[in-house]
Amino acid sequence: MTAVMIGVDPHKGSHTAMALDEHELILDVMRVRSSTDQAQRLLTWARRWPTRTWAIEGAAGLGYLLAQQLVAAGEKVLDVQPKLAARVRLLENGDVNKNDPNDARSVAIAALRSKGLTQVTKEDHTAVMKVWVRRRRELSRSRNRVANRLHALLLELVPGGLEKEISAARVAKLLETIEPTDAVGQARKQLAEEQLSDLRRIDAQQKEVDTRLGDVVAASRTTTTDLFGVGPVVAGMVLGMTGNVRRFSSCGRFASYNGTAPIEASSGPHKVYRLSRRGNRQLNHAIHMAAVTQIRHRHSEGRAYYDRKIAEGKSPKMALRALKRRISDALYTAMVSDAQRDEQEQDQKGSGGQKGNGSVSSVTSSHPRRRFFGQATPEPASTVGRSAKRVTTRPNPASSRRRRAS
Image 1: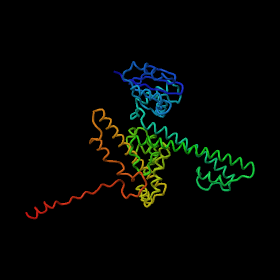
Image 2: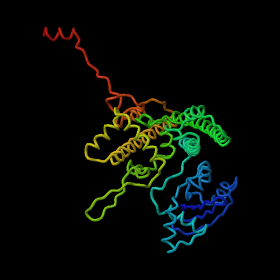
Image 3: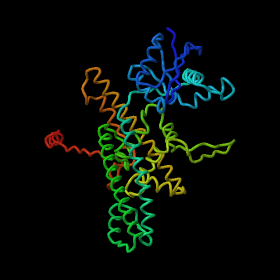
């Protein structure tokens, strides 16, 4: 039976699908409007090809909803990056002219020719984390805007404004000492009080989001929080931005994705590596926060590694980059270990097994926290993980007497 690749060019108002056979010959084209029955109409159209695979351009973007609907229907869906389809279009036609059918064809050809494309899977706890991480980022930006406006207003009420970092308690204490004598000063104080209310409201919303994010992280049973400096918020950012860790074949590819791997810019015999500004910057920021937390606590293994790099002649920034790469590798190992644990538990449920047998313990026995940068809570520790208790065997007095008698 001939395998068919269906390329989909998604848009806000419509989706264009084109079916190609294994020789890249066009079989048919279908365009549907974005509506509640979009997936059903496409499935009805594609029913003539039992052996089919869907390739959606940007399955995490405009094609997100359609991709999830097809996966829920039991279809195999591949995520094709827009740059791959653009390269196919340029090489095939020699120009950059584009329309929806040509784009769908380029997506299908890119899926046929490319290896290692990410297969779209059903959403899990990482999608929930990503929702709350996005909400927390929006609240942080809103708080920064309110804090900047409040700081500028306080400069007009008090010489020098507020010296320390702006917080609701400090601003409220400062406003209690201000007694304006004119109408302008009174208006500014009233506006400052309103902005203080906005600041308190955003702080309360942030606390609620952190609580929800912490609950989701705890329910996921992730071991990334065992790494020093990785709390629920950082773990939620890492897991939410990473998604399915299986799409990274190695820790180096994961480091390249999060921007902690240097970029090679060599020429001839000269080997040069430069700082990477690529990758997911939000994920890079989460790793940066974990690295800074480790450096601030002198008893952590991360701080010891940082000090060794400084002693080797590295600059503070270079030592920080090296530490971020080590943390990236530790996070990758922890996420892969968690994925193996979850897969084995699913296999046990499917085969009628019970949790806690040897196959699961074999995964958790090589726990990542025994190899990377200490415990999650900042407390003095001289070892990376919890040290095993030393077992001493005492001689049996009866057996000792028998040996002496013999």
